[in-house]
Image (tube, rainbow, N blue to C red):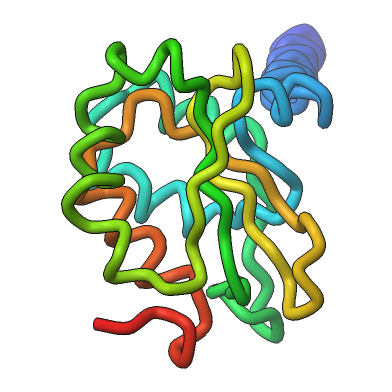
Length: 158
């Protein structure tokens, strides 16, 4: 009986250790395009739009639990879509967004930077960088939906 209780306790401790070790460091999350601003509910929303289980799993390893008194929707005043012009041909969905849908968002500008992977740089009301999100594998509809949800209502012109 004592052995059984000890074994169960050991298994419980191992399970807890695995759960906590299943988190990424802040640097790993940033390299993947996630920041501490990502709420776990945002990962659920991501899962609805992006059918990449590994990406959603990475999001969940980086997210912060939603609290009852926090805003579950962090919003921004503007964004910069940054991409390397030389690599743009490898991202047809991003090209399609820039050519066909970017004008819908007056506070989003495109910036070309050598060797930069495609990313959205989210800005506060003073135009300062607040969050960076990698969008390498996003579809243009996902980019549009994300911007509609994350840009302040008076910023997105639908």
